[in-house]
Image (cartoon, rainbow over all chains, first blue to last red; front, side, top):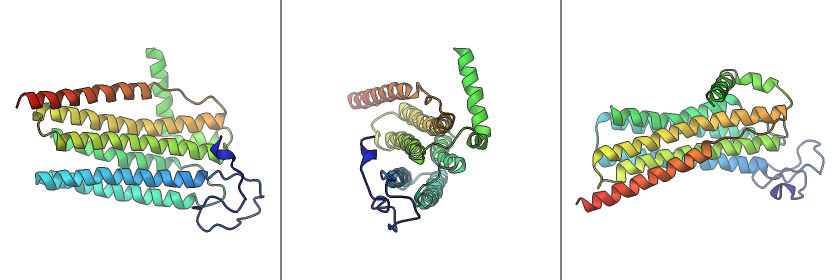
Amino acid sequence: MSAGRRPRGGGAAGGGAAGGGPRGAEGAVRDPAAQPERTRMAWRRTTLAFAAVVALLARGTVHDGGPPRQYALAALGALVWLVFLALAHRRIRALDVPRPGPLGTRTAYAAAVCTLTVPISGMVVWLW
Amino acid sequence: MIERLWYGLRDSLRLWLAPERMRAEGTTPDYRFSLANERTFLAWVRTALALVAGGLAVDQFLTGMRPAPRTAIAVVLLAGGALCAVRAVNHWLRTERAMRRGEDLPLSRFPVLLALGTAVTALAVVAGVVLGELGR
């Protein structure tokens, strides 16, 4: 809990918890520990990693100038990345409250399905 | 061993099919613990993405290798990525439930398997590159 015990004012819930300012009568001892912010950045990192994978897919398509199904693969990758981006955006907005609720199972499933789509479609296209 | 695997599988399936039932159990943990679990889930998703990227990179950059072993390594990496993504959700659900029930967090052999698998695949890539260079 080393990082979690930094004393902070109730209102200064991490620089990134946009808006700032006191929210509700939370009391001054609440320890935000920048948890929502760290989680927000984790979503951002993951979206970025996903973008790198999609870029690699696009590179393969352009480089090989391969068959149409290669293009379909890259397009599908870009599409699921957009879905992932939307999920991350929604979750990040949901985190922007004093006491964010847990991640919804549907969001978790959807994020995993987006991730799964790339390797599965890749295997289908290669092994065709 | 088999029995434990079977019970684990049945338990997971139940959890997967009716995740809303989990939310009805126990008490909601401190939001910080839930967020930590969420970040762990995301870290596993990134691991899955890294494996997928590795598979794509093997396919695109190891052009010195013969196509058959190259595709084989790439497919293994992609399959590993897919497995990682599935396990990310599974572990997240189990941890969430354990926290609600106040149980110990679930243990898992998966990281060990992943480490071994990564090592073996890396060696295969090294062998492929070296043999490709020698055969030139």
